Image (cartoon, rainbow, N blue to C red; front, side, top):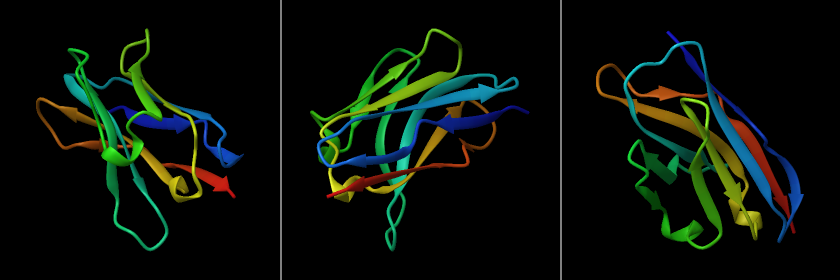
Length: 116
């Protein structure tokens, strides 16, 4: 079974930008929806954005107008373009995939730190 691998996290100043990438390592079949969640220190994991295979996108209110999710040309890749970052965006960001069968898949997470 394939895995999801995230990259692109790091340290950035408030107002800056980062681009997160998520790619499947190995074969993952029948993905219908890929998205990003995040977990800030002391908080529960929350949905940031998702995109379906049909291109429908959905964003949490706290990132609307600042973050953009998109699919890559390669199969089972997804990106999260993050602009106008705020210190409260500091969190571990996780990629996840929903399939027609089988459990939801999660990546290992990538740290995003926004300094004020």
